[in-house]
Image 1 (cartoon, rainbow, N blue to C red):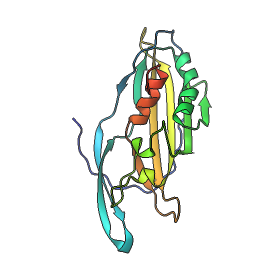
Image 2 (image 1 turned 45 degrees about the vertical axis):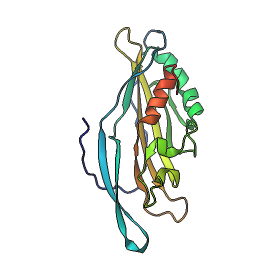
Image 3 (image 1 turned 135 degrees about the horizontal axis):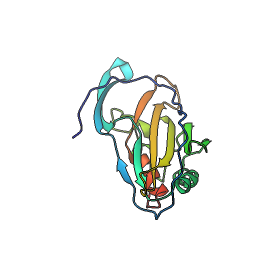
Image 4 (image 1 turned 180 degrees about the vertical axis):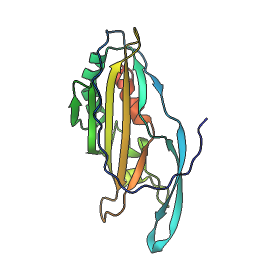
Length: 199
């Protein structure tokens, strides 16, 4: 059961991809639905300074930080080879490919206004303004999305791990930015497509 915690708002921070060790390849197998292990949810609370110096508290339920993993019934090489096309189909600009580490990513990239035909707020929870409009749909969102593939248990295909970090800032009169949480939907979409399932 999720544990509710209160976290202070963090200022805009740069997001960067980490370099991982190389992963071994495994044998091929039929495509199957991914089995995901998703971190628990946390309730975050932050204060947003409005016009006239008034402050309001935003409370959102968002996925705790950390990579989301899924076990796929496909080989490491086939999943890794599919990831660039998966990212492109979702609208994620691939600018990082590390073959030895079986890693594909969109690092420090501007999120498009539509990801998989959905608004950014479907994937990034940056809070909402006093009118209830999601900041992710108003602000410019900078994201880092990294997927890594490694061998699974013998006969289990491969394991794909995806981590999403993001921040949002006003597109005009830029001031302090907002740290965004992943809703978990983007990781799920990537894993489902990489496993040969529906997005």
